[in-house]
Length: 176
Image (cartoon, one colour):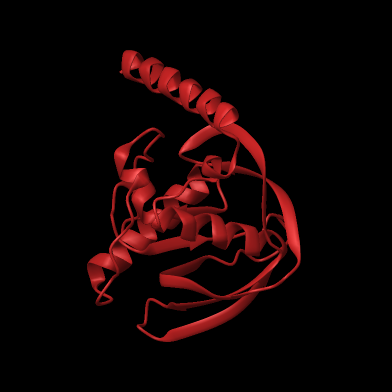
């Protein structure tokens, strides 16, 4: 099966602000999309990617927070993921986003979350994530709800980043 690198939508794009639709069945088409998303994420390079970021309005995300070259990659595909428990402890992490290139900001989120999802075999899964994995899964689930990490920022900083993205999109359009 040929994996394909998909084009990642750049903010502001109205699709990035829409909630994605729940997935009713795991199909071969869906598995192909998941493969493409992993390929796109690794190529970017990133640690997470939500389907709406490639213009697919479905509740699916991929992630792999293994950053050490000596460690085995752990690509994960989460279908219809939801946070079913969040710990009291909060953690601030400098987040970035493939749809908002080269922009980073500190976002506070629960340090530990338990997530339920369906895997590519149609089986229900649950896992408790901590550290970078917890931040990443929450960031990607936000995408499925039409929320970006910059939505956590103060309006002025958010507007500044949005203006930079508008300018970047103009430059990219001119270079085509």
